[in-house]
Length: 253
Length: 352
Image 1 (tube, rainbow over the protein chains, first blue to last red):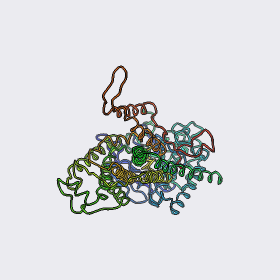
Image 2 (tube, helix red, strand yellow):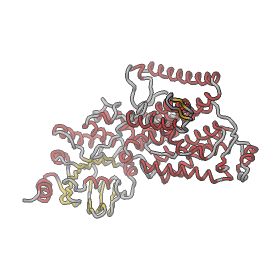
Image 3 (cartoon, one colour):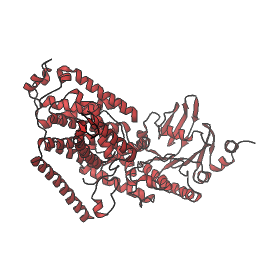
Image 4 (cartoon, chains in turn red, yellow):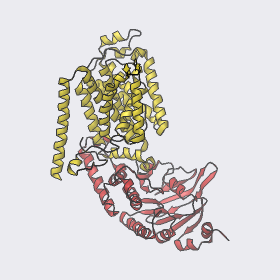
């Protein structure tokens, strides 16, 4: 029983095959990594799972539901949230507002009740604000709630993106290079943080990462892509000793 | 905190009372020409707020506003005119029978103008909102022209290029500013809530907004349709204030004026739109002398029609070059400066 399963998904852009016949199987509560050299098709795989791209071939199942043709917002509603490689915050909005937007998908009052500030809507709003504040406290962002998102330092922006994704109540969290631009100390903190949020929010985590320290330290299983093809799969120590992986990363002599 | 909150409420109520008092005063002391400008201010605030909702807050560059205003203006006019007036207007070709004997009072007619404009907005938005940025602007501009051409040619409904004359004069300062205040309140409360935040998120980053579970198309349509509704109501008021309407009134230039107000005031600022709505409308009248004959001592001109618009174009260019964010940027007025001196609270919608 897999939480996320992809069945031979392939993505072609014209003549370029970005990802070919990718078969992922992710179980509940796992932390799985996806690595590979630049241009291997890692982000494309993420974009297919979250339906930014529709796979040219193959299908994707989330808790046995075929989500291949779903819209991105429907996928978020089902419980898959993501962060982006190049941070995509709502820059001109405050930190709190960014997280509140992540709650919007569960708002049930229609627009008119929100404008009239009816009791039903105000209850929802109060709940949203409390939940978001708790989330920001958990992620140590409670000192900047009223700052504009663009004014945050890089590390906090990364954390805010995760907070925003968590606000959608995901079951599966996709992290696209969470450690990009972090120094070794911050990377270690990030590893602890990933373990922490998995326990706290009962998450399954699938992440793309280049920093080997993070990947090997945090992932229980790893997929390796090269030119869109899966060249290896296994636990961190297997991957480290796999000749194909070494070849893809270091070349052959 | 409780005390501060109370003071804010008192201040807001006082400000509203002062505004109403000013309007009463204007009504008493100003002549009809000046009152017309006061009325125009109110109408332009409503119209500019509707465009700011679509463009400044949701990030959809729409230039189709004149079309929705035309729809609102014609609907309101046709519903409020007396059967006798209609018969006098439609001398080339009689009016369609189902419109000939309708005579509504002003408020339902205005609201109906808004509703019909909203329907038009919905129909146009459904295909056009798949586009973005400049492409959306061109598409909406095209649709607005189509509406205008339709109105020019539907002789038996709109009286074609002859237009409609002798609309019953209902518009006064209470109508125009009442609706302007209603629009301001609507916007303030909308952007205090979750839907307003979703609209802003779409403006900031569509991909991220959709990844946050926001149904892009539905929210864009919501914003566009509400904006069209407000544009329709504003158009109805404008038509009624003018007393006569014809299709030529609703050319691109009208949409451009409203865009000027929005950009000058600050995209995504309700306060900015209100301020610049008043400033631009007053200047538009005050600068009328530019169109007339002028004597420069060395040489004199016998009036260059349109020089006023040249000045406005230059103003817009200056704004775009040097004050890219307009008067207010995306900030809003709030009473915070009284409590924390020297600092405007950024981006929070507090009482007007």
